[in-house]
Image 1 (cartoon, rainbow, N blue to C red):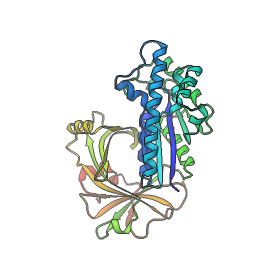
Image 2: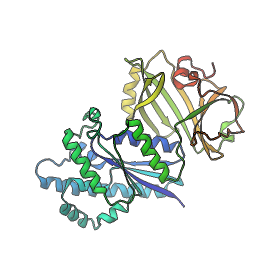
Image 3: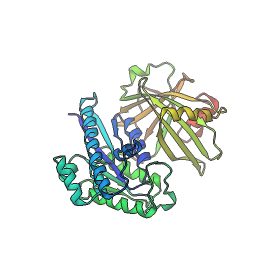
Image 4: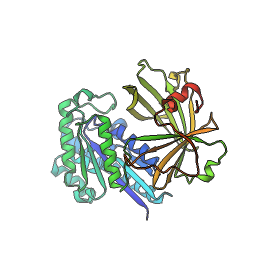
Length: 369
């Protein structure tokens, strides 16, 4: 049976939805899932020139337009998911249909639903899991900004009110989960991923990454690895005005379709930790190319993702070094034993050797020092 998991990512303004969607997509694509993303319909309409300006009646009309479009979009994505050649599919919804309840009265929303021949209970049943990200305007005010969404104009107080109304709109869903700002954003990400792993009935990695140097010179990787996902990665490092901040852009694809990402990592106590990642357009990717740090080599590699003894591995083979690759596993048990693939020639455990990070490899253009 094809497993299609339908997950709503919702929340108030500036809650981290866009970054969270990208992280969820990347995390589960590498685990063999086909991940589809239904974009936020309200922003799509407003950027296209359709906005709820003026009287309250205009908001009512706007919600009618919005639901009409969103129903059609969701129908298309669900139909596509059913027809895809994949047994594990996640559909991520950047806001679900019940989000619209936050912007009109209960009576008005019922009128709209009646027009579409549906009810709130039927909307609740459409989604398996609802993840509400609390706005940074509530508990992390120093991070609240309007800069990353041209359609956003809410003050701190407005953002808090919208956040509360949005959350209340989903009350009644059996798997509504709330993620506040009691931790930093990395902690928020970890809590969200843990909830998704639980819903998928999979073990979540502990965050402890083990790395191994692998001799790949005399093996045919495509024949010995049953690859659940294979992707080509081109990674450029960009100039940075702050020596503790690493900036990079990545192109990831399979020869036909490519996605593009911008990432910043900040050095904290001599370690590099996630700071920000966002999906970008191909045009913005080309713009960033003008900022390439020419003192660093471009990383070009093929990533083979596979499962061995119920463990999930990623093997990176670098185009500029045909002899060695880097094998990674993110442990699901802090103290558990890792069973390394017996079909790979593993030369050394390099987990604690920073010389085998992509950033350090980009300094010398080869893997093994």
